Amino acid sequence: MNVAVASGPGTSGVLRPDGQEARTVADLAAAVREIEAGRETGRDTGAGAPRWVWADTREVYPALLDAGVRLARCHDLTLTEGLLLGYEGRHGEPRSARAAHARLHGMPVPEDHHEPQARQATLFEEEPPPPDADLVAEVHADQLRRIEAVADPRRFRLLVAAESAGALIAAEMGHEGMPWRRDAHDELLTGLLGPRPVHGMRPAKLQALADQVSEAFGGPFNPDSPQQIVRAFKSAGVSVASTRAHEIKDVDHPGVAPLLAYKELARIYSFHGWAWADQWVREDRFRPEYVVAGVVSGRWATSGGGALQIPKVMRRVVVADEGWTLVVADAAQLEPRVLAAMAGDGGLARAAGQVDLYQALAQAFGGERDHAKIALLSAMYGGTSGDAPKLLAVMRQRFPRAYQFVEDAARAGEEGKTVRSWLGRTCPQPSARWRELVSGPEGGRAARDRGRFTRNFVVQATAAEWALTLMAVLRGLLPAPAALVFFQHDEVMVHCPAELADEVVAAVAEAAEEATRLLFGQTPVRFPMQAVAVRCYADAK
DNA sequence: ATGCGAGGCGCC
DNA sequence: AAAGGGCGCCTCGCAT
Image 1: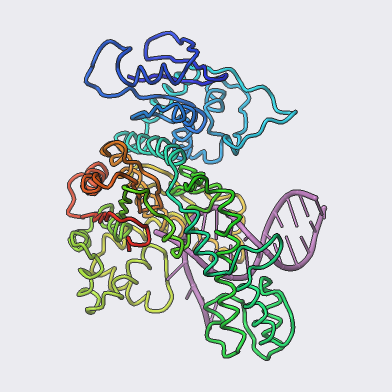
Image 2 (image 1 turned 180 degrees about the vertical axis):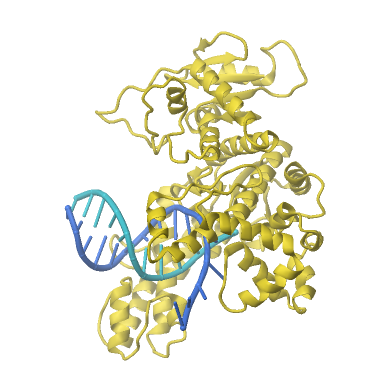
């Protein structure tokens, strides 16, 4: 059963179950909770929980979570509209439910709001529109029609369900937060940088390194300025093209070591230092703002908090609560496995039946595991440097279907066509600027760049779908009060009471198998998802 | 004062 | 000669 929902004002909302009239309720959370529990419908159809249909999970679900309500499944109109518009070659058109509704009726289409949750009331902002469950139901019906019109509706329905589940999970992770010990974080920072400095000062150890750098170059300058660094090297008689670490690490100059140390620590200080913690950590929980499908490939992004770029050194401050444990799991060599399954390449699929795919391939590449890895990565990323051409030639010969699969994607991109993931997510069309560029003198370069993008898109986007599906399945298997608290492309973290650890570890393995079955059906390709129960994130690897 | 691109580097 | 995909987000340095 579908139930269209619109929320506001206050705690009120409007509900419209399939085939019924919309009705206003004063306490939306209470009404939703009752329906989810099955008490209100008066019938147990056996079809499972209702599917909640709403304009945007970010606008509805957080308030429900605050009221203690958890829902099994939903259909997020905004995310689905984004998927459909992309499929229909209309990337970039506004994807909000109101925009979709306006298009249906030939009315002026409102622009998307960029930050629905951070949106601030200003003097100039218009009143929020009244909740409209009929609008929600109407757009939903239209989307269901459009989904049936795609080449493979079964796959696309799975994509929509997984994406919507992702929206639930993102909200729940924001609600729950990842354990983050402020005291341990402060201790770590103090050890690396010295005590927290007063406003505007560099931490002591950072300042000491800056002084060492200045001394080595015989004059003060700002080590945060790449231009000044290049100039300093120049006057020391060393010509460097850039100040990247790998570029200068082999330069023989006494300033290099302290400079590299400075850069590393300065980054930690400014990205994940005390000020960051003040903003993002509350009561020993880190709550980033996840953006579902924030990346065109369907990967998640964050709009703050840098949750997807936490330095590994910080993992030691992610510690389970007393009596609880962290179950950390990451998919091993996900992307080459995805390629093997998608391409239907028998040889590669057989290798992907092993836990170490690259080792299984080593024999085909002269016994070198590293060569196998470079070949696969080059095929998926469009790499051409070093030994790549030679190894790609081997791949073409030994694993022709996998090779051809990514080559076809690259050709399509170079020709300005779009490509799709396994479930139907579609890459953006080339920009007008690209079309201009590609017919100009530098056209070859632009074409190859886009070819690398589409080559990678088909793999990265499908890997993201597998991970999203895994998470959606896992969410349904988790025993309360276990909760997903972190997700990073191909890695998940569950926070649970220690006595549930075994059950959660088993759930991860089951979810990986189910995700594989849902995407690829019968396939020899395995997707190992090793989960470990640890007290501290740093112990997981 | 504010905006923005570049350089750089963290994560996958 | 060099030539790998996707991000976020810091500072710098210049433009407005």
